[in-house]
Image (cartoon, rainbow, N blue to C red):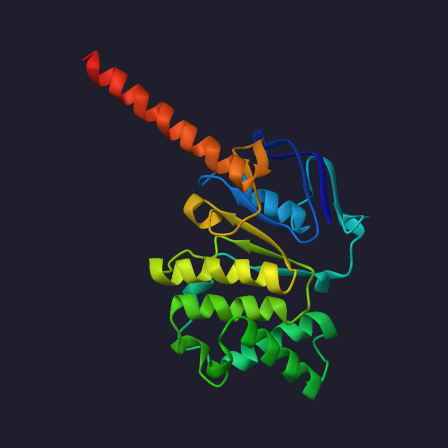
Length: 246
């Protein structure tokens, strides 16, 4: 579905990404993990076609990303939608309906089939009972679910989420990660989660890619957990040795 070959990106003289090679396969749930400033959001923008790579190539569904037109195949939940204006006068249903315009066009008149798709999307994120509530009345976690529904209503084949749990409390965050796993399993939806939250990735990701200006790890979740546990042990041992030598 997504293929990156030798992708690098520079901001002026600063090398942000170097020689990224990454394939995202249909049905996968991939966690792209990195600290703030590691280049993971820049990588996402390159995949989505929002930034051209300085070198290398990007393919979406077998096409060069520059020429890819069928954007309805790609769902996107941006960072910090939890900062949504509480006074925005739109219902949950209306916010999700906005996603249909991405598929049908801005001047498309809303039909009953569109409303059925909205209802289905809200049911998938367990927010159907809130369809007539104003979006600004909802909690941060509930708003995030609505924005996932807005992405789902375009009937995408792959959904990208950029730090989607920013500003969400732990209880809602855990439920959110469980929801992503459910969507991946029940709808066979390809999910790509961009995050610094390694605990969140462990909830359901099938594969993990670690980015720190280059791709230094890409394997199964099981291998990722083994590596992180080994690194934690090595760090603990190093602290113990350092303490004994003080």
